[in-house]
Amino acid sequence: MIAKYILTLGIICTFIGCANTMSVAKKGQPKVVDPVCAYFSDMGCINITVDENTPKSNHEGVTYYFCSKECKVDFDKDPSKYLRIVSPPEGAVDFVCHMKINELKRFVTCVYQDKIYYFCSDHCRTKYITNPDYYTGKE
Image (cartoon, rainbow, N blue to C red; front, side, top):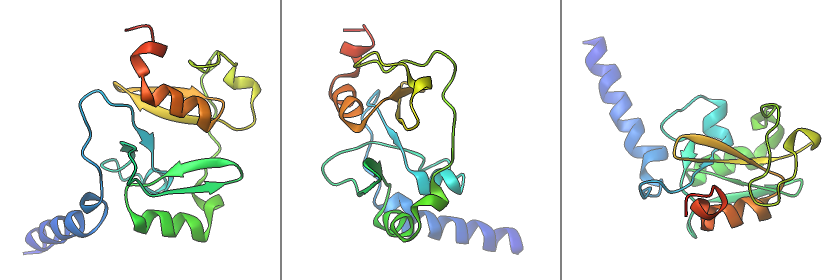
């Protein structure tokens, strides 16, 4: 009985929550991390595809993208709650401008083909997202 209740609740949350506003990802398309879902370890919504309808917010000069309007609202209430200090791996380099990420105080990321890429700015990340194979040498 309890297991049936939990399963039903999970299905309802999936349809009401993040799943109903997530964009459909094209195979191999780069994705970004939703900081709210990452904070709550909601693995189904962490990596999202960005398009013109993707909710976003700017905080201290950095653009953050969200799987839903609800996540954006939560983030806007208290951005520092959702921004973890994460260190990039030693030797990480921006694929667009070739800047060393370890020397920066702030950086942004995206996920492409199950690999995390680090960038010095939204500008470099946006350039990368438009043509990732060009920057990774696969084109």
